[in-house]
Length: 182
Length: 182
DNA sequence: CACTTTAGGCTAACGACGTTAGCTCGTCAA
DNA sequence: TTGACGAGCTAACGTCGTTAGCCTAAAGTG
Image (tube, rainbow over all chains, first blue to last red; front, side):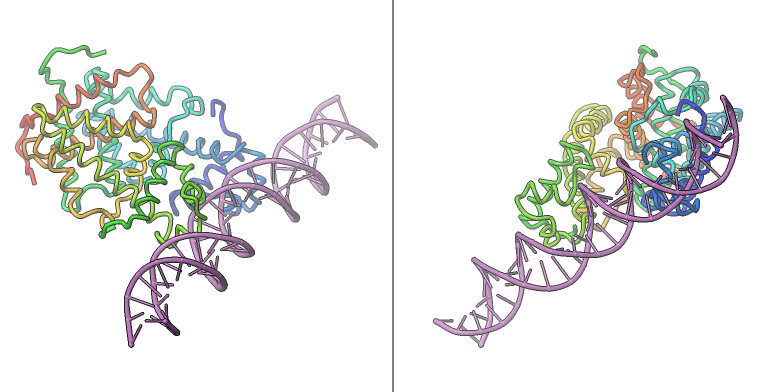
C-alpha cells in the first residue's frame, strides 16, 4: 500500500490481526474477518481487491511496528545485544504475524516508503557500518527466531547461550583476511 | 513416519514432490496428486490419513536428503565453508521443499530415527564441538537462505560477501568472555 | 476347493473457502 | 430534485480437503 489506509480498511486489518494472533493463519478467513466486524464476507471486497492485499496491509503494519522497536533498541549502549533482544521478543510476542511477514516473498511496492531502510539502518550502525556483516547479523537473528518458532532446536538446547555465542562472534568485524566490504 | 513407507506411499510422495517443485505449494492438491498417478483423490486416503501426513512424509524425505548432503560436505577440509555452501545450494535447488521443511513446527515422531542428529553432527564438529556456536551457525545459514528465498535482501546486496562475513565471524569461538558452553 | 478377508480402487457428496454478480439503500453534491 | 456513489446485502460458483459407502481382485484359510 503506497497510500495510507482508510479508516474502514484499518478496522478490517485490525480485525484480521486479532484473528491471526488468536488463532493462527487458518483462523484468518474472509468470512471470519467479516463476522467479527458484523458484516458479510463479500463486503470486504469493497475495501480490498482480494485476501492477499489485505494480508499485505497486515504485513506492512507489522513491519512498521518492528522498525519502531528496532529504532528504540538502537538507542541503547550495546546496541547489537539490544537489537537482538528486540528482534527476538517482538517475534515471539507476535509469532503468527512474524511468520506471515517472513514466509512470503516481499512485495516492496505495498510497503510504506522507507520502512525497509529504517529497520535496516540501526543494524548497520550497530555493525560499525559494515553492510555485509549487518546482513549476516540480521540473518542470524532471523534464523534463530524462525528456528525457535518452528520448534526446530532440540529441547535441551540453551537458546540464550546460542544467541550470545552468535552475537559475540558477529559483533566486531575481526579482520581475518581483507575483503571487499561493499 | 517411524516405519518405512510402502511402495505405493513412496510413489505418492514422489508425485507430490514433483508437483511441489514444479508449481509451488498451491499446486500440491490431493486431486492433482491423484491425477498424476491416474487415480481419484479419495483413493489417496487408503495410503495416508490426511494431507498433512503426506506432507510430513515429503518433509521427512527432504531431511534425509539434506542430511546426506551435509555429511558429504563435512568431509571437506574447510568444512564450515563447505557446509554453508551445501546448505545454501540444497535449499536453492529445492526452494519449495525447503520452505515446507522449515515453515511448520517439526513433528519429530514422523521423522526417521536419528536424521536430526545426523544432520547436526557435522555442524557441531565443524564448530570445534561448541554446540551453542553450532546452533548459531545453523541459524545463520538458515537465516541467510530463508531471507534469500523470500527475496528479502535489497537487490544490490552482495550475498556471497554476507555469507563470507558470517562464516568468518562464526568459525572460531574467539573467547571474549568465559561462559557455560552447555 | 470354497470361503472370507482385505487392499485398493471407485462415485457421490459435504462443508469451508475465496470470489463474482448484481441488487439495495442512504448520503450528499449539483 | 436528482444523480452518483460508497458500502452494505444475498445468491451462487468453483476449488479444496475429506467422508461414506460400494465394488473387485488377490490373498489367505478352513
